Image (cartoon, rainbow, N blue to C red; front, side, top):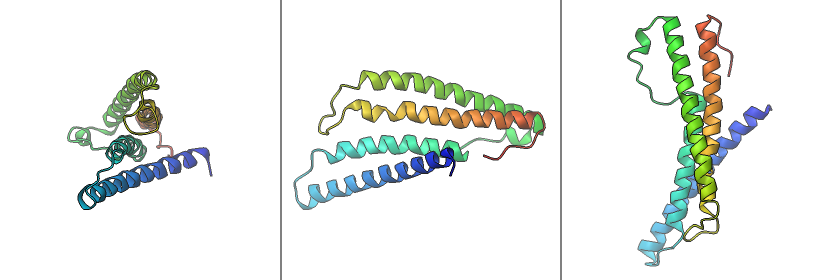
Amino acid sequence: MPLRHRVERAVDWLAIVTFSGMFACVLVQVFFRYFLDSPLTWSDELARYLFVWCAFLGWVIAARRRSHLAISAVQVRLPPRARAALGVVAALAAVVFAGILCHYGVRITLRNADVETPSLFFTMGVVYAIVPAAAIAVGLHALGDVMAAARALRGLPEAPR
């Protein structure tokens, strides 16, 4: 199995694990708070951090599958070459956005690398580390979209993903 497919499977599984962990934390918190009248101090915080990770991993998965919401009213009315040119511009905008997010994500991660979470055993740097990691992954997918749109612009068939 190629490295790319292994990384994609790892991202999929990590998204499943973070979502399942978040769901379990919320259920445990509800049980302890309302049935045992003894709320946990850590479960709400961990669920929040897992939600952040799950959201960013979902962004990566959606970028890989090209399944983000889009308004295509203009795009569908364009001729094929203009549609491909618009695809190049949109993909380049995604690359630029991912680059900016990666830059600031690295800065915020490093700035919070030694800030302890209020009730957990890791630092806020771990929480923020998903920002540059997801930005790099989405940027790579967007670069692939740039190349695919450029091939379409030249009239070449799209390479398989």
